[in-house]
Structure formats: C-alpha cells, structure tokens
Amino acid sequence: MRKWAFLYSAAALAVIGCGGSGNGSHTTGTTGGGTTNNVGVAIKLSNLSTFAPGSIAVAYLTGQGRAVGDLSATIQQLRFTDQYGEATNPLGPQISCPLTGFQNNIVYVSVPFTGQPSRYFTAFNLDFLNFHQETDSPVAGDFTILNEPAGFPKQYPAAVRVFPGRVTSLPVFIDDSMFTVDTVNPLLVDYNESQFLLANGATSATPMKAFLSDFVAFNVAGYTNTAQLPNLVATTGIAGGTTAARVFFSGDVYAIADGFTSGANFEALTLDPTLPIGGVLGSAGTITTGPTGSLPHAGTYSLLQLNPTDLTQTLKVVAGQGIWREHKTVLRAPNGNALGAGSYVVTFPSSSDNNMQEMVAFTQDANENISALYFGFIDMDALTFNLYPIGDIVNGSTTGAIDGTLTTLYDRYGKATTSPDLVHSGLYTFNASDGSAAAATQVGFKNGTFYVFRL
Image 1 (cartoon, rainbow, N blue to C red):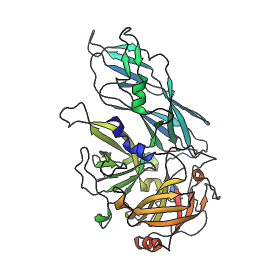
Image 2 (image 1 turned 90 degrees about the vertical axis):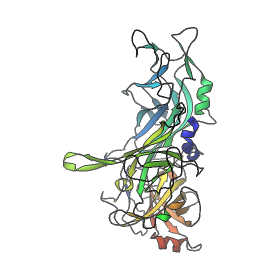
Image 3 (image 1 turned 135 degrees about the horizontal axis):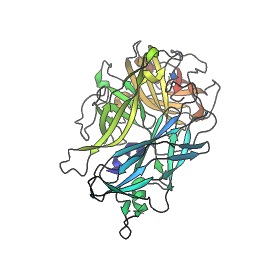
Image 4 (image 1 turned 180 degrees about the horizontal axis):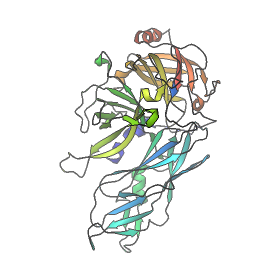
C-alpha cells in the first residue's frame, strides 16, 4: 500500500541526475530570433521582482488511529543543504504525526534562489522534536513526552530537485513498526532502521525520491471531437469511462480529470495504463486584492486509496496532495496579457533537470479555449522532439506521432547555449520528410519558438 501510493513518482523519476550548472533565470519570453506565429511566452509563477523561492513539501505519511499506548512523533524544523547553502524552516509549526493508522502530514521548507536554474539536495535529515505516548490517566487525551531515539537526527540519501517558484514533494513513510517504546525502559523510544529503509529506500542505491507535485492544467473541454480525448480508467473510487476535461503536466507526472470543480475525478498516470492513482480535484478560484483586482490562485488535488484497516473496504485515506494551476494563469504574453489566439509549444523540465523534458504543443482561440493538444518529449542533446495526440496519454500509443528537430537553444539572455538546464527557449521545425510537417499543419501547429517552464 505504501509503495503503491507513489508508484507514479518512481516511474517518472527513473534516473535522477545532478544538473544545475551555471546561472539560471527569473524571467522568460526571449524568442532568440527566427520567426514564429506568437509573440512569446512568459512564465508567471510569482509576483516577486526578485528570484522567487521554491518549496519542498515533506509529506510524512503515517495514520489516523489513536489509542492508549500509541506513539506520535512531533516534527518541527527541517534542514536541506547543498553547495549554495541551507534551506530550513526555523519558525515552522509543530506537527504531530500519529504513527498508527494513516495520515498525510505536510511540512514546508522554502528554498531561496539567487539565479540558479535549480537546486539539488542529496540528503534528508530524519529528525523529531520529541515523541508522545497516549495515556488514559488521569483523563483521556493525556500523554507522556518521550525523547527521540539515541543517535538522532539521522541522515539518509535523497534526490530532491527544487525549481524557483515551484513545489517539490518528498514522501517520507513512518509508522509504529519503526518506533516503539522500549520494553525495559518505558521512557525510551527504540528505532528499527531496517523497517524505515524497507519503506523509504533511503540508501545510496535507492535514495528517497522527490517529485514535482505542482501541475499545469490544460482545459480540453472545448474539443469539438471528444473521441480525440483520453478517458479515465477504473480505479479506487472511480468507475472510469468518463472523458477527460483537463490534462495536467508537471515535468515528472501526467494526470487527467473529468471535471473542473471541487470533487471531480482525478487520476495520476503510471507506467501501467491500467493502474492510475485515483483521487479528487479541488477547484481553483480567485483572490480579491484591493486596487489590483482579482488574482487567480492554484487549485488542489488529493490522491486517495482504500484504508487497509477498514474491513468494509469503503473508507479512503489521502495518499498524496499537491496543487495545480490553469495554463492561462501561468503562461502569459511577455507584457503580462493573455497569450491570445495561436499555436504554442512549452517544455517542462523534470526532477533530473537534464536534456530530456516533457513537451506540450497546443492551439487556442482568442479566449484561450484549447482546440488541439499534443504531448511528448524533447531531447536537447540530440536536438529532436516527438509529439503525440493527447488521446494517447493514458495508453501510451505512438500512433499519429509528429516529429521534428531543434536548431538553436537560448538562455534567459537570448544567447545560444548547449547546457539544457540553462535553456529558456529554442527554435523548432517539424520534419517534412516523414510527413510530420503536413500533420502538424493539419492540426494548426507551426514552426517557431518553444519556451521552457522555468523562471
């Protein structure tokens, strides 16, 4: 059950590289020359004029059961360190994590940036403020405070990539098989490290893997031919068969949803098309802010699975959470206005921040209603890309592929670069020799400039 909840992250992060060379960017929209049918794309993830921080969401996955004798771990401060310095939350709230049952307790760490394209943390500190044990004397709800086990904090190998303005989630599994009250001295807590390693990997060969958990959502409800759209698959709590109304991309994970409002069915896709991870969508909205008017804010999603302690197998527990943003709120024209009608291509770096990125091509009208959407991959070393109809995103079919080549890649300053993690835009051309150019024209795509989803 524990492994299954984050199957999609393991599938997406087959290889985690270091990357992170040179200086990065906090703006985009450079065309780098050439001709294109649009005015450029600016990535809008923050209102800050300086470098926007990223965020690590450490999700302690435990449980909800509480009874006499049960242990809860209290978590407060987290520390992540790389060559650029330390990211920590010195004023973080105390989070109590009951070790029995199933809960999702999230602690956030803000990661500062001074121009790096991304930051990569290779260690996770397992640390607790204290433990407390439930008692029934003198009144229900009382507890005894216990110190964390000897030898803590402990450091474990991890792979945690963070981008400016984005959210990275790191799942950490802790339960009552790992921490128990000492049978000889009831004021001590014993630590079973083998159980922690079994649940988390946490070795040099299998580090604890984080993943990008903030999605960009493309609304495909305006498709005139719904047969070209993917359908949701039957999974926990979802009957399946409904047509996708939104498609989500993060750089690490794909997802689909069959509605727009809170409670819509949501599925994160895995390498097995028959085993998506089901959940529910939380709708996005607006924040009213005085003279500047209303600003959009992110929606949420929750991944759900059956509670294995429920004999009826009807109750569900949250196995993961994250946010999503509408494409029209984060993909803007360089002047801050809406993109407008046209065809656009955007790529999404993965947690490897290397030459391979997700690629999304779409056409939209003046009201930003999407009429065509393709997904695929770009290789910035081989200077090639492959795109597929969005209807194939669940089954992984390569039918109807359109391919192309890249020419020059540009950094944030509009200068040519060969370092994938520095690329903010580049020129692309659909191949004519294999019919890709004609197929692209048929759906409204044109040669031009692609833009990378990074600040």
